[in-house]
Structure formats: C-alpha cells, structure tokens
Amino acid sequence: MAKISAKLVKELRDMTGVGMMDAKKALVEVEGDMQKAVDFLREKGMAKAAKKSDRVAAEGLASIAVNGNTAAIVEINSETDFVSQNEKFQNLVSEIAKAVAENKPEDLEAANELSISNGKIKEAIIELTQVIGEKISFRRFEVVEKDDNAAFGSYLHMGGRIAVLAVLDGTNDESVAKDIAMHVAAINPRYVNESQIPTEELEHEKTVLTEQALNEGKPEKIVEKMVEGRMKKFKAEIALVDQAFVKDPDMTVEKYVSSKGASVKSFVRFEVGEGIEKREDNFAEEVMSQVKK
Picture 1 (cartoon, rainbow, N blue to C red):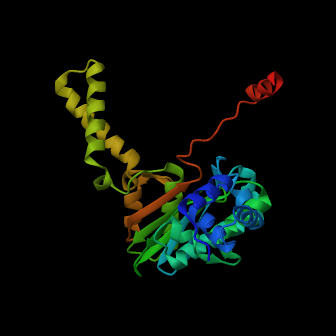
Picture 2 (picture 1 turned 90 degrees about the vertical axis):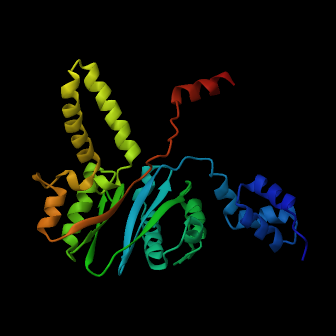
C-alpha cells in the first residue's frame, strides 16, 4: 500500500473541499493517485457536495424522537425553507432524531457515524445534497434523559421551525408536559427558574436599571424600590416558572404544574437558524456587477 503523506491529503482536501478523513480514505483506496482520488470522491458524490460547503444553510427543520426514558432533539439545516417541504428531507430529519435517541452519541462527529436506513448519517446527508441540490447540514442535537416518574413534553411549531423538548418531574402526564413545551415555544424563556440565572447577568441588569431610574430623576431613596420591582419583572421575563402561563395568564407556569403535582425539570428549545448569520444578497448590486463586466 502506498504511503499517504499529510501533504497529499491536504492537497486533495483543498482541491475537493472534503474532510481530512474522507480525503485520506480516498487516497488509500486508489493507492495515492491524486486524479483517481478526485474521481473517486466525485463518483461518491462527495466532491460535488463539498463545493456547496461555503453556502449558508440557515433554514431546515428541527425534530424530536423519544425512546423510552431517552429523548433527542435535533436540527438539520438547508439553504431554503422550500426544502423543509420535501418529503425526503423530512424523512431524513426524522430518522436522524430517532437514531440519536436510540444511540445517545457523545458529539456531532459520533452522531454523523450512526447508521440509518440508507447508510451512515453523514453519507445520507451527502446523498440528499446531490438529490436536492442544496447544502444540507446536521447542525446540532441534544440528548435528554428522564426518570420513570417523569414525562417528556414535545412540541413542533410550524412542522419543526421551532422544536421544544420539556421534562416534568412528578407526573407521567405527557399532555401537561406538552402544555409547557408549547409555552416555551411561544414565550422563549432562557432559564427554568431564577436560581439558574448567572449572578453576573443579574448584577449587570441591576446596574442598568439603577442608572435608568437615576436618569429619570427619581430620588435615590425610592430608586432601590423601583429597581427591586423592575428586577422582579426582568426575572419573570426570562425564568420559565415565573412567567404567566400562556393558556391561563391568571396563574404562573409554576402554579400550573404544581396543580398537576409536578415540577419543571428542564427544557430545550431549538429555533431553526438561530445564531446563524444569514447571507443577504443584494440583487441590484449583483445585476450591476454583471453589467460592468
């Protein structure tokens, strides 16, 4: 077997855009022949798919799968929201969620190696990229565990544009847990309760609110009470259990779940594309650039 140098692997990677391991595998397969390695990757559809790697995939779907006391929430991205209506894409997202829930991989690299109906996840993504003609990417996932005396609440908004996986302790009533998942989807809290809010965040907010009150010209002796009230409101805005329950604003989320003999343990909320800087193409500038050529 020909010796495959790191330099050769890097050269093939630069030519095709595939990952280092895939480049090395291709070179080993063809005994170090660069052109044959490129052909090998093209035949596998990998080189062509890699050319799409610089595109921005900020659309797609999130999904949830439950396997006993384990559940998984995943996000698979595409370039346009039109792809989310594609049945093959929807099936792939569902299969990935199910595989993650069943196998509980440690990280994204391990998740991509999991097997589904048509091979490994990473291979299925490459294959679908070829079929659809858009960049498809497995962005993230989270595995959540629960005890026997607990319930998963899952909710998909707009078919998976927003996905929420909640866990309630003290009940097996999935409908109650789903109510909380729906609330989280709508209101988007950042923490379960006040104890999870970082001290630095609270101190920062308190400083800002104090300055605001002072700038309003309020006497210093009442500023403290004003800030105390505003801090309470701030905490309620970001802590789930202190929020007014969407289905019954007369009670808090905590009071609602308590009335069911339960408590909120955790939640995970995925909104497709959040945190991804989407490219905004300027059509007029694009046209003008072509005219000038």
